[in-house]
Amino acid sequence: MNKFAPGSLPLVIATLLLLVSAAACSDDTPAEATATLTILAGTVEMADASGDFQPAVDGASLDAGDTVRTGPNGRAEISYFEGSTTRLDFGTTFHITFLEIDDDGTTTISAEQVTGNSYSRVIELVNARSRFDIETLLPSPRFRAPSMPC
Image 1 (tube, one colour):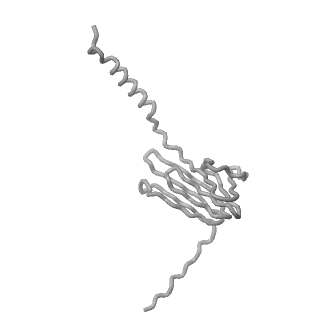
Image 2: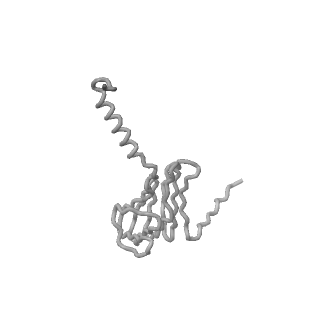
Image 3: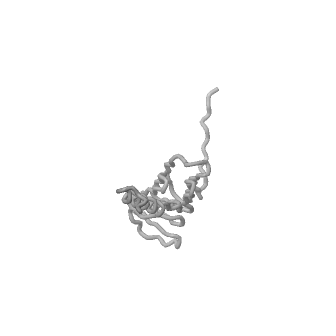
């Protein structure tokens, strides 16, 4: 005795295959938190946690612990996993200290600018716990407000 209506067996099999493949594809592991290096001009070097600098390769993947250094004619851009970017001017040393994306989408990007200049474009943060921090190890510049006439 057949429990299924004629022609419904392929539909049942297709539904089961769809459910099994959806379960296999649903990975609760957070997206990989990496960054990508783009060489814009000149000499750019990178080092992993060992600290040994090598010539950088355009499109290289950067992880926490990696350092990028631009030469006197070098320019580079770091594109982070969540869409923000940091441009490195000539003579800049930039160390990525922390890259993370949590299960709830909270993102954390932390870096140290050891020397030189950088310019960052930060996308809208996902939530109040998300962070994008760059610590400068250089003295902070001081600005004086112009005097205003009374």
